[in-house]
Length: 142
Image (cartoon, rainbow, N blue to C red; front, side, top):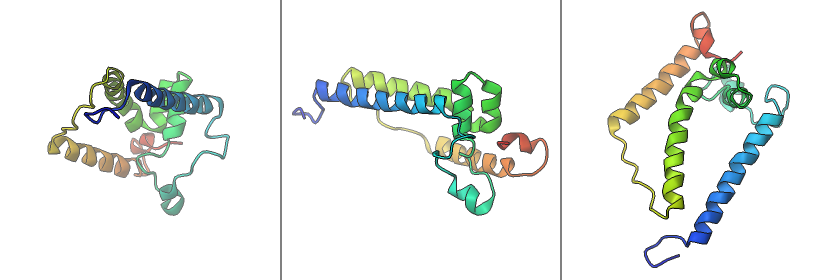
């Protein structure tokens, strides 16, 4: 550690490289092994116990579809995740660039309104995807 509490550049680059390598390895595994055909992927405990879809159900199948270029299939598996991915990628990219430049991470300053809106959107998505008739069934993975 440096005097101001920042990590040394070599350590910082090593941590970023390990994180990127882990992300790449996960993407390669997900690309090669379809979640619908292989049992080593984690199961959703909420779905197993209740039979209902949580907001994350279908996420691995959606990511698998995206990695294979099938946007509509990915949207069918988990539209909330697919719509959130560009925002998550931009946020992660900005954070990565700051980290590589040796700048401290930006303070997390999210207004309460946006947090409440996100929570309401996730709850609404969860409720709507569990309504057993069209058009709500399109929000639930097959």
